Image (cartoon, rainbow, N blue to C red; front, side, top):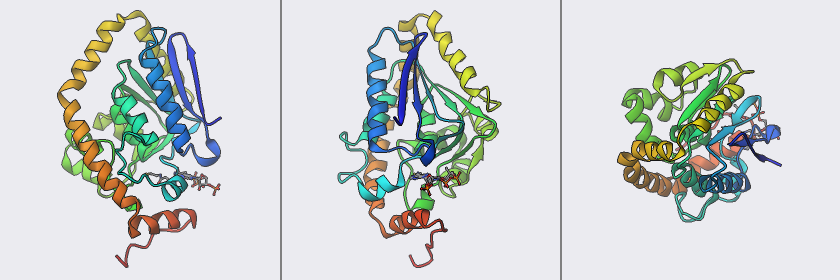
Length: 257
Ligand code: COA
């Protein structure tokens, strides 16, 4: 089992559990997470969702072998791809979504945080969106949301240089709410998620919809533009070199491009 789900005390937990591959996300895992979010959205017994990983690792992002073997053919924003179904389910979730970032959060592991409501980060966490290092481009509106949140030059460090950053940096940037000791981050995030149990669920959902409404259409447009480019770049010689380098445990050589 690579995605574990359980509802306890009105909080649906989605736990990424593939530690032997650093919680890399396969198409089947995106499908499982999408289905869990979609079900939570209409389940009156769920007041909030908690997304978490394993000790030391939140997720290393998309499974790079999946990128090589099964690159989506119609652009990454195609409704039919499991990753897009998952990201749309996250974007459309009216219930509060809380993330407990238990360790490294790479690629979509950081991108998805931009669409959560409350984010708690372990003091061991390292976040990164190293798309350029893989010959790729930002995804799921991170090229819109991140510069809007932290300004162009700070976003350029993270998206154009692909520089990793700490949990404290994430808090300073407004990506995360707080840094917690590694052993406490999940329990803290769970307690925060459980706070919604005593609040009026309709008012919480309407508040979330209002907060998201001004950007919603623009986010979808940018997601589509990024997705089309992402699909092309997955097949580019630059990306092929980067994926091969990853599995050969060497640095990619972009000098020939
Ligand atoms: N896709 C597929 N396999 C992955 C993976 C990914 N995204 N991330 C890690 N793995 C695999 C490794 O290939 C390795 O497999 P092996 O044991 O069969 O050789 C195993 O998981 C352990 O990874 P390793 O790199 O040895 O662990 P680490 O602790 O040294 O580093 C990370 C952890 C997360 C920093 C590192 O694995 C990493 O950078 N992963 C890729 C991140 C990435 O570029 N994601 C895509 C973003 S779009």
